[in-house]
Length: 356
Image (cartoon, rainbow, N blue to C red):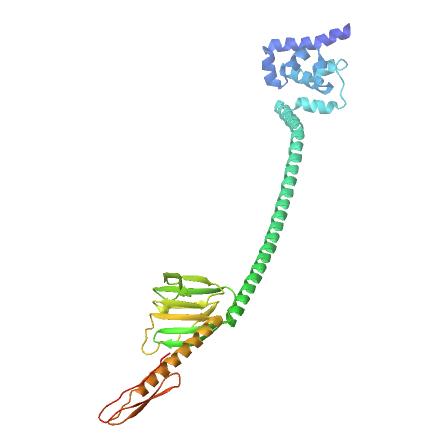
């Protein structure tokens, strides 16, 4: 009972000293920086409510000093009744320190508590950040590898396409060049502005290309075996191609501006000979003869010309007469000889001609 009385005495003694000073618990909390609930626990002798044995002696001494009592003497008086500490010197030093030091210590402790609360959040955030960075790096590598593969594939594809296109173009060009080299033009007849050429070396369908170079325009018409195939006026830089069937015998080309017109047969250019006897260089008629039919036609034309020339000569020879008795002989184309006798003073101009 005496121990309990002593315990009540320390709380009562501190309470009476505070009241004597006229302090309220709030005033004492401001002065000592000790929470109000701990001050109430000390006055009620409820030392178990304090944070620890160390704080019991520290708070009791600080409480006593604040209300005008000697804290050290009070601790000595109730030394056996208060919880013991392992470092009394440290307790005394803390009790003698400025209350602001205790406030600073409390702030440090609160800051440490906050840090301890934030450590799990910070750890989780760091782990999530590391995972996101790893995903981003993997995605970037995958994208780079995919892009590199696509570029290499495109290069191979383009290279293959270029190679195939180049081979096809070279093959086509070689065939065209070979075909053009086999085509020849031989001038058969020329009269004024008109020209006739025999074309050899063609096979199958032959392309006839009409193009215009230089400046201005040129009108051209094309007919084959008496049938009109095409006629139009082309401007500079334009062209037109006509496919001539393999059965074509004769092609006639009429051009109104021959100097600017380019004629190509099977890929080979036809160079027109200069006009004869003052013929026009602008308006020209070009006849192209293809195959055996053109040869037969040329031979027939030559034979007809020879027969016509013989008939003319025979007729001229037969128109001869003399005064008196004269004998004139005319030779017809059949090789027969006709003799006519005239009397004196009479001109007998007798010539018998059998033209055909």
